[in-house]
Structure formats: C-alpha cells, structure tokens
Amino acid sequence: MKVADLTSADMPDYQEDTAIIEVAKNGKPLGTVEPSRRFYKVAQQATAEVALRTGLNEDLYINFATRTGTRRLCRLTYFRSLHGSGSAW
Image: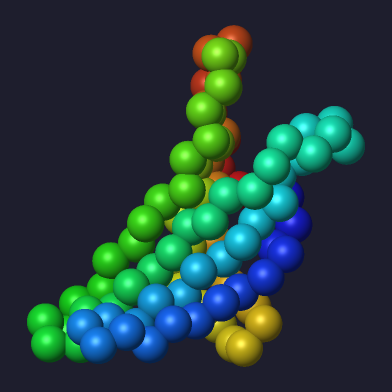
C-alpha cells in the first residue's frame, strides 16, 4: 500500500480529510481505496469512513484514524483471508 495523496475539504457542516491509497499485491496494482475522516462542526463529533476492498478469498479494511501533519496520516489496516486468520498492520 502507498499513500498517493491526502486531501482536505471544508464543507458548511463538516471538515473532511481523505487518503487516496494505492493497493497492490505481489507488485501487481489492484486499484485505489479512499478512507476518510469527517469532523461535524455543530455536533463537535468525528466519524470515519472505512475503505473496504473485497475479494473472493480475502478482504482489506483501511481506517483513516487521524491526520498527524500536513503529509502524514495514521491508519489501521486489517487484512482477512479465508485461508487463515486476519492480521492488523
């Protein structure tokens, strides 16, 4: 996985940070996923939109936990395989 870009948007009701992450397996590109984090201004509450990439034998979940700087993010990634137990990175 590689973070291709981090974007921010300031909407009337919320602020949103989105990570654009390129996913590859064994060097073969599989596409991109875009987990995001929103902060609702009135409610003073944060939510996360988890990116999910599913396959026949495995699932990839990426949670954009927090932004730690202008070009850095903290993420929690969980990989689940039908051939064994999952692992968190």
